[in-house]
Image (cartoon, rainbow, N blue to C red):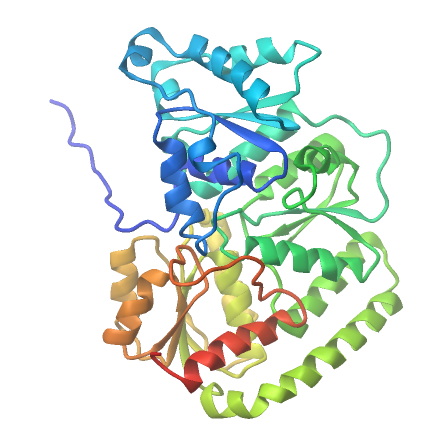
Length: 444
């Protein structure tokens, strides 16, 4: 008799599948063309499910309805889809001009056993053909975060080459997943600006004029910075092993003066930048930021100081946000729910950050939960003035918990986000504007 298989059901997941994560990662680069080897609805589903839910963003002209796709049918399940893929790659290159073409294979070819790698390698051998790589991203390979890492694994293994020399001052930025992190565009631009104050050049990969050129610079960097407590670390280790690029981990884009100064000192320490050079930048930036901070001090004292708050968000915003609210605004975090999927070995370090990193006698209870039903159950045990979460918590906050609400995490369907960012010295001020605007006119 067959053993009964145990199934786990997840209500309203806060991420997509591996294909979705890789798809949005490719679309986050300039002149990079995704080619989906999958069913016909995959690209549109990801556009609706990820881009729209990430601050109502549109995708590039290479995504959505325009996404090249083999649109596999029943006959391909029976006879295979390799020939269809060859035709699709050739026609895509003719019609859509890009620097990099990325074949993303979904569930169907993985189940039926299409040899996608052989098809891609055969085409890549042609000297006149543009850069082409393949990432195996069936939905069952993981979620959006896994898709991001699978894509970069493909880049490291199929595209990158040993550099002739290191480029002084160049640093790679990894760990921010396009679409999945709703402030990804603004955060990357802010990090680039902050690092520039030390004379460093951020190799963003995303938002650059040519994503391919940025990718090829990865081995030439002096350092890789991971802006997540766990996403991208596997990739950074491979880059270090293969090309000798060291890496550091910072648990999310820094929010406000304290975190940003800590970030700069850590980066400078890795690159042997003189401490006095960093101190000059820190002193000037903190002076300006805290002077502006004073302009909202009265509002913060009236509406925010000692306010009990809750956070339910993915780890790379939850940690930075909680530390800023506690250490710079005097709020009291009662509970922090990490809604992404850090591995067990990363959960302990995240919990430590959310306890030892807080200058408060009150420490939050830390939970790791992705199921929206269970998240609601946990939040229902607490009484808080404001919750920082996804848009899924908005109506419960207003109607059941009688609390204020601000969407800071995926999905975010109640605000439009283009370059909005809470990162950097003055990012905390932007966050305070959003928070205090909710408080002065609640439920409007």
